[in-house]
Length: 167
Length: 167
Image 1 (spheres, rainbow over the protein chains, first blue to last red):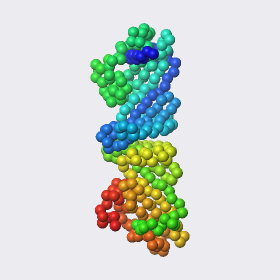
Image 2: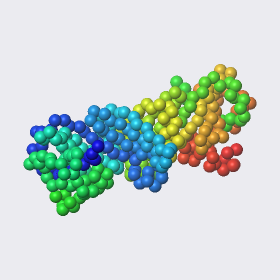
Image 3: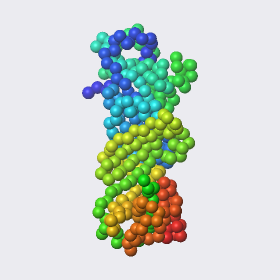
Image 4: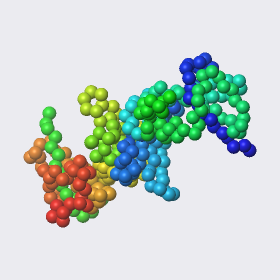
């Protein structure tokens, strides 16, 4: 069994849209003050998550070790949209487009909210050396750049990057 | 139409139990840090509520005025019990017993949690002067004492009262 390699690229222009075969909204955020949770003034996180046609409200206790509890409730997507607007931490809001190019599927994440303007494409490969298509909209590779991680984007969104970081 | 009068009493001993015809668990608390909400580091409250055989998770935005939003989701009572244990504010936990005495119904609230040890009886009357039964378990009247209000009990529970206040 091979190890999956994921490469990440910036995306240039709009040429990829014509090749998208499916698009899914992916959004999440935390209702709770993150500092209150970290500093123990609150015992559970409250996360809102939208994945395509489904949405969930998730509560997770902050105890470490074996007693950690998790509760996950489906909620209407319209409610989740309104709740997302009330979130204060961990905000990620994007549309994931599945874009087919020469037998490969690029996952093109078009960010919204504080990360609006950022579009990245991820491609799974079976080995580091595997050849892959390079459509004209595929920009510079950013696989190694930590600021593109979802966790980093939630804490320090694209809108707060320096002009040098953005380009 | 008369104005309803509610009188509240301390309860002595256990004699009332034999006259209880129905008992309902009533419990609520807030998952969120109350200060974070008050000070605007969080935009919505997250309340857990158990009322008899039903339980709810409630989220309410903190905006004032017309745009206040509220979301209420039924959850399993067992989940709500576990979530209550994670709550940090507004904790009220009691069993309400409906106790029949000579055609009147006393609501006897037997508190749990931080208010354990406190038992109060409420009686609705049609006028301030209306006669009412005085079973041997009915203690001093506390109608006018603010520390017995649910809001006060959530903020400053019975366990933190001075010995003088408790008796």
